[in-house]
Structure formats: C-alpha cells, structure tokens
Amino acid sequence: MRRLAYGLGALALAYSSGFGLFIAEVPNRSAQDQTRTDAIVVLTGGRQRLSTGLKLQAQGLAKQVFISGVNPDVEPEELAGFGPNGKAQIDCCVILGYAAANTLGNAAETAAWAKATGVRSIRLVTAAYHMPRSLFELKRAAPGLAVIPHPVFPPGFPEGSWMRAGGLTLLVSEYHKLLRAWARSIVSLGEA
Image (cartoon, rainbow, N blue to C red; front, side, top):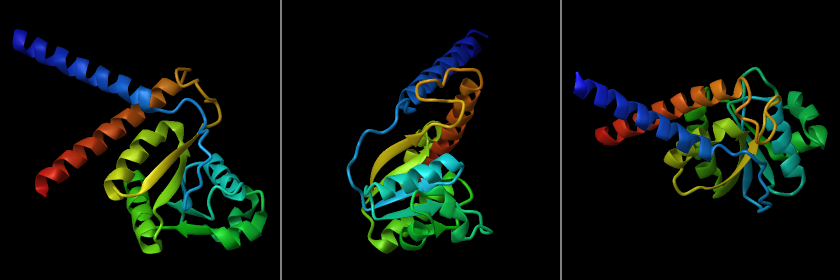
C-alpha cells in the first residue's frame, strides 16, 4: 500500500510540475518582435487569429500569409473583410490550406507548404494557450523552420489573465492535449 501511495504521490508531483512548466510557456503578452519572416502562418480557430495575421502582413512583416486548416467550404473572397486591404490583399498575398483538421495536421500542412515553396522562416499566429502545443508539433514536423511565435488573446482573456474563471479549465485541457502529443512523439520515436 505504501508503494502505491508513493507512486501516486510521484505521479501527482510530475503532473503538477509539468503543468507549472506548461503555464510558464504560455505567452501572457503580445509579441514585440518585428523581425520580417518569409511568411506568416495562421492556424484557424478564431477571427482574431486571421485578422491579426492579415494586419501583420499589411505592416510588411512578411509578403504572404498561409492559413492552415481552412474549412473546405470557405472561398478566398469570404476572407476579404478580415484584413485591412480587403480583397486585394487576399488575392495577392494569401494562400489557403484545406488539409488540416487539427494541430497535428496544421503542423504537417505548414511543413509541407513551407518545403514546397522554399519558406525558411515564419511568424506563427495562434491563440496564446495554443502556442506551446503548436510549436511542439511544428518543430517535430519542420525541424529546420525558424518560427517566431505571435500569440493572440481570445475575447475574455486579455493579456496576463489566464487564471480567471474559465481560463484554468482551458489551460488544463490544452495541457492534456500537449501531454498526448508528447506521448505520441515518444511512441513514434520507439517505432523508428
């Protein structure tokens, strides 16, 4: 019985320590880095991500925007209202990726697109809570790709406010998803 108690205690300590490390990795401020990249990559999941990516492109931080995980029913013209330069910006500078259905798919789709187009650096736009897992998956899929994280903060969770009601639940859920991604990577290493 004592071994079981020690084992459960060690497991609880590992889980809570890992969660603490995860919390430390979740950005709590907007990106200040104004370095130009070859492209801006937006992972779908909210209007704010898309409008931020298009605004960054309009500011000259990259020539093109790749949007990963777009619903197959979405036409490029439908996105014109999200950017500061309307349809002209969509026509000249936006590439839609329709293949991804989740974060793992976003990483694979982005890696394949970057390789096919010669893109070597990106600015990654996604929700702050989603950034650690997105970076983990992307680094596995495209280890040579330089990535500048550019977090956005969903409505109700302004910068630095993750511990509000609802924020902790969201972070725990995302931590569990990161643990599954980490476990999947360990299993795939064993199969190689």
